[in-house]
Length: 105
Image (cartoon, rainbow, N blue to C red):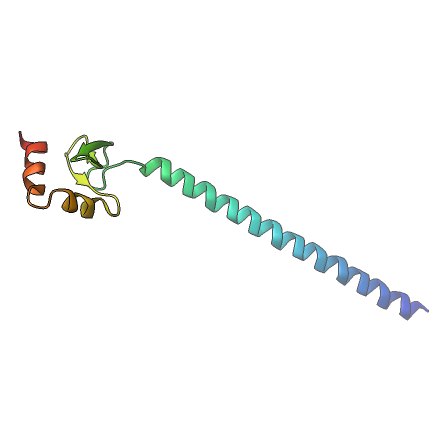
């Protein structure tokens, strides 16, 4: 009888050990996901609309009807995906002339 209780007790301990282990793993994954999301949000606020060249703020400017990003310090112009193609479609022969007017006149 004593051996049977010991076996049952061991199985019960194993069962609860496994339950706790699964719970800890699930909570760890949730916490890791939450931390990753927080880090992503922090990085976005640190780098959002910052010039990749000098790190200063950027502003959106209208250039031939398309909003492009321009650095307020070094005047670097940066395009989001597809914006350059749109500019070239709008005014292919005068694209560089338009940039010249925008920045140097």
